Length: 453
Image (cartoon, rainbow, N blue to C red; front, side):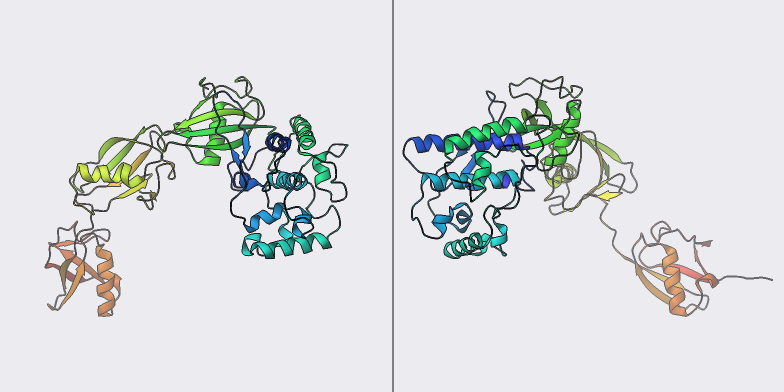
């Protein structure tokens, strides 16, 4: 759960109303456990998991898992001060409730508690050292200031059991059941229009939607929270999902948890969606793109339509099929570009169509496998009027002006004072060796420029 609420997590924008509702569920589960006479002993975000969203529910639930079999240093952050200093040896109901209070702070703030006690991070220490450091830290800070200010961005007139847990002076008498009641009340307060502010909340975006993204190609589901307004269209919601998850707008099919389809022109309000409501975005279906294949210098470009999926690698979805289609030798490397060679698609073997924003109907250019490899070098002879010759090894694509400049440099003359002649015709600056049909061993004559008064 801590990972989902972290600054890079899927639920990093989840409002307080959602976070408090989850905490109320945890408190209720802990109270039910205490009613049986048992103690959990390891309440912390790492033991909380988000349950899959089902069609029967429009709000995801959380579950408090069993205690870890092996203790780790991160567990120290949620230990009661009396467990830290050795006043008590085994966990109790009170230590469970305290741990849930620290867990609530973590889930509401999205940051690790008591960070000031561990300059190098708690994972840098073994369990015994971490206990000693945190115990010493709690002993020297004033009561009620061990944690930074309340992560809630609003405050009710009367302190609740949650606020009491955060205050060392007023912690007694808080049970898991009373904490659950306080959390439910706080969740209702947070759900009001004037209290629904959360971490990352932006004025004007008072609603949050929980989106379950079902990737049929990868057979996996991930969730995210997007901030929207009631008059947003579903198309705008899709754009928010793309911004958060990377799944392209065009490949998303959005529906309600009961399977009812949501059209792009529908608004959030007209669709009956409310704050913390749930929708499903199904992705993974294939779509068509156009590939412009440039495979011969002397032939027109060929246009091919391919079906691809957003999660496919560019090499597997586009380059390999084209190479196989034209019988390219194994290991032949092809290149793909956007916007007529304006942007090369880098690392095609390890990047997906989605990462390059190749949408349905997109056009990409592929340099074909036949003659698109750079031609081999040829040797040409540059001969002056005296018959003295210089030899140059160049590619057919090399500009003649570059050869002229190199020749002039070797001879110690100005490039403007000479000109090249091939077949009795003066060579233009933008000509190439291949364009002049120079073969291996071809001769280029050098003449002095004639100047007059």
